[in-house]
Image (cartoon, rainbow, N blue to C red; front, side, top):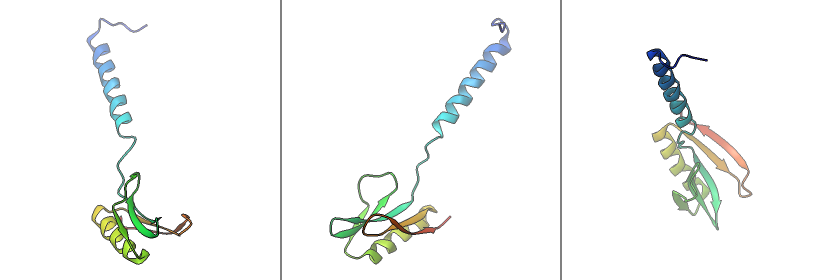
Length: 94
């Protein structure tokens, strides 16, 4: 059993606690990947992880242009979906 009266014990314990806390808080980073998805009878741009859409467009090509602008700004990816929801293409702007 470790000696709790030594000053290093408490310092080590606090250090371990802080390390665990920092590791656990960095698990889920915010991503800026932009998805071009079917939306009602139109096309939408939606940031990955968001429920709400960023913008809606009549044509898929217009939605792709918007998604590319956002992805370039945030150094993210554009994920283009087909009408059935499957992924058609992925463009990386890292």
